Structure formats: structure tokens, C-alpha cells
Length: 440
Image 1: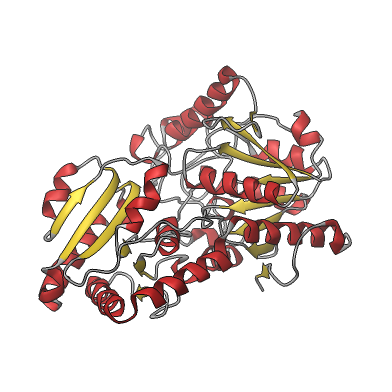
Image 2 (image 1 turned 30 degrees about the vertical axis):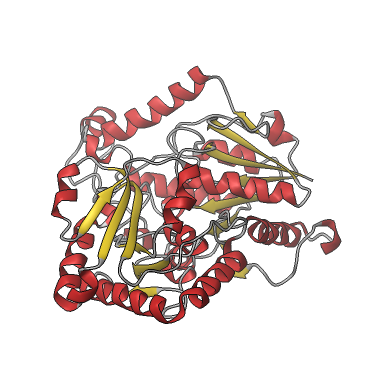
């Protein structure tokens, strides 16, 4: 059986990393799975660049210019939205035409247009579209934040503002109720209504948002988590009650979504509520940061590693006791999964897919959004838990991650879904029943 997984990149960004892991999981089960990408960064022989660099760049620039114009040339939101107007026609690519099933993943920024996706669906193969953010269920944005216009027909998009932009003045299409978000929403509705696509949300939180949206409320939406490498267990040092090591990492630490200000406030709360624990706590951060002066505001002992290699990640987690996330929203926060796999207790807000990862007070601590005092209490709970049952909680976390997120288990769930969609005998696939979740 041949499966092609289509994603913008094979290594850059969270969607790329987990899609690559899914491909490896499928291959480990005997499936001929391969990736088709716009940007190939790995040396894997199973990843193919979809077109020439010139074609890919031209499509990318055309999509970005359209967004740039529609937003009144506001650079700050240039990568927060996509219109799905520009892309590459991959319906004639040999890997797509020869595939028995097609897995779409993160295909924005000029990689696939909505018309291109329509052409792929028209081939008649099973199409599974994994949602790594909210773009499939909104007009143009990847994360809607506090906006709920996706429950209707979008329009009056907060990203675009109310004023007529230079682009809309030239082409005579008004901003406001019938802006580009509303028009893209209609194009998505037409695509979803005319083609058979199975949507997979990577967390129950995202799945619930999908079923609340006007675009996906009547579509087939499933929930299957992302694949994470949990096969190897790095050697951990025994817990030292004299020092509690915390870890906080992100591609960009001061991305507004990551809640770095909330992190700082959480440590202020820790010093006020649990001064004895705060005095023996050290924070390690990793990732890019555009405002390094923020690091100086962390009110406890801290160090910053900067950008780190993928190979270094297991060792960083293995040297820490607690992994923190103070994000305003996360589809499925991979740092929490990785932390659990390598023995770090997660402490995070209940602001997305965290409950798919953490069983509160068993394999981590879930705090009320955005109560920084509760994050402080969660850190204190983790410290006291480690003092009492160090090896027990680490064992529970690791088993939880293996069950929920190992590459082979995630791959089996996708194969089970394919078997269902194809109405094939279950012996065609090396899968186990009862793994896939349907939202109702």
C-alpha cells in the first residue's frame, strides 16, 4: 500500500516534525509511506521535493503578496493568515497519482491552493487532512484567539481591520462583512461540500472547535494525536530535593502566544506562595528570543541555552524535573509530551490540547487559564510529588506517552481510519480496532 503525506516541509515547524514521524511510523508497519514537500531539509530517501525551487518560491511569494495587500501592508500579521489562492497543482505528480491514499497536513504559504486540493480529491483516492492548527475551520487565520466568527461565515476579520485596503480598492472588493476571510470561507465551504475529505484534529480541543465551526460541523472529524519519539529512554539523575530544575522551551520564546509574561508572573507567585521551593528552583530556557532583555526579568535563578539541536533535546529534558507551558493556546503542546517521555512533570494551563497529554494530579498538573498562582501551586505540587514518588510518576508518564503518542500507535490509528474509509477487510492493514475517535 502506498501513502503520500503532503506537508510544506519535512523538518521546519511542528507539523513537519510530527508528519515525518508519522511517515516513519507507517514505514515501520510495512507501509510504503513517503513525503512530498516544498522544502526538503532532511536527507531521507523517502522525502521528495514537489517542484523546482523557482516554482515553489514563486507560489510562496504570490500568496504572501496577496496577504500583504489584503492586510494593508501590515507585516506583523503576514504569517498569521493564508488565503488558499496560490499553490502547486500536485494532482499530476507521480507520487500523488500512484498513491492509494493521500494525507494532507500543513499545506499553506503557497504550497497548495484550495483549487489544488480540489484537484487532488477529484482523483478519487481517500484523502485525510490532518489539522495542526485552526486554518481548515476558519476563513484565513491559523489561530482565531478570542474571535468566534468561524462559527458563522467569518467576515469583519480582526486581522484585517475594517478599513478598505489598497488591494480591495484596486479590485473593488470591500473589506468588512465580505472581506477576504468571508470569501475564502465560501471557497472552503464549496470544497468541503463537493469532495470527500476526512479531517483529523490532533487534539480533542481542536476537534471541539472544528465541530463548533460552520465549515466542519457536518464533516467527518476524528481525533488522532501527533507522533512523538518515545522509543529510547535517556538516563536520568535521581531527584535532588535541594534543587528543582524547570524547563521552558519554544521555537521562539517571546512569541506572544507562548505567554512569556505569564511565565514571569508565575515565578513571582511562586516566590510569594512557596518561598522555600522558589529558593531552590532553577529555570532553563531554550529557543530563539527577539527580546533577550525579557530573560533579565525572570525573578528566579535561570539560564538560557539559545537554539538547540534536535539531538540535544532528550538530554535537556533528562536533566530537568518539570516542564512548563504558559501558552495562551496550544493545539497539542509537544514540549509537554517530550517532557513526559523523558521524565519531566508537565505544569501547564488548560488552554488547548493539554488534557490530551496530562492526567491532572497523576501525570502532571493542569492550571486554570491564566491563573499564574495556580502555575506556582503546580510547581510546588510537582516538587512534593517528586520527593515522595520520583520513580512512580516517571513510570506513569512514560507509559502514558507510549500509549497515546508513540509513532507506531499513531500510525495504526491512521491505518484503522483508512480501513474504515476504504471499507476493506481489516486484515489488509496491521492495525488494532478501537483506536480511532469520532467526534459527535
